[in-house]
Image 1 (cartoon, one colour):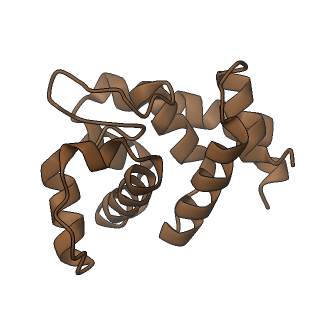
Image 2 (cartoon, rainbow, N blue to C red; image 1 turned 60 degrees about the vertical axis):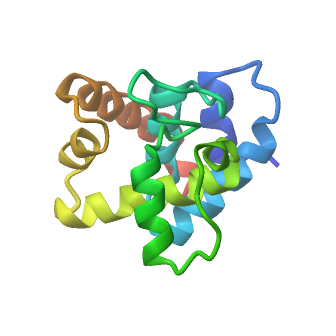
Length: 147
């Protein structure tokens, strides 16, 4: 299996262990949320370098660098019966599912404006600039294969 999502992940992180599994998860959760998987790849790479154990100074956790309050908000919106803890956010499935849902929500709020949505996601214009640039690069390299 060498789809565009896997190709993009390996392009960014050639020695990443578990790249195939990650690409399947990114593809699945991004499509469920209605978000371009290449945007999710760009965001996860810039947020955590695909490190599910990453924790920021602001206590954002995992691949998509989610804050606990965001995850708890998702849990209430989806009638998730278990308590969402910071440790849960290290789980790639939960982190990607919530991150893709949150990104889709922000894209809707910003009428599909990727830069505005990413800026809201992270809080930094400079970060949003870097994600959008990477996303555009990935689209040029791999979008033909995404269809």
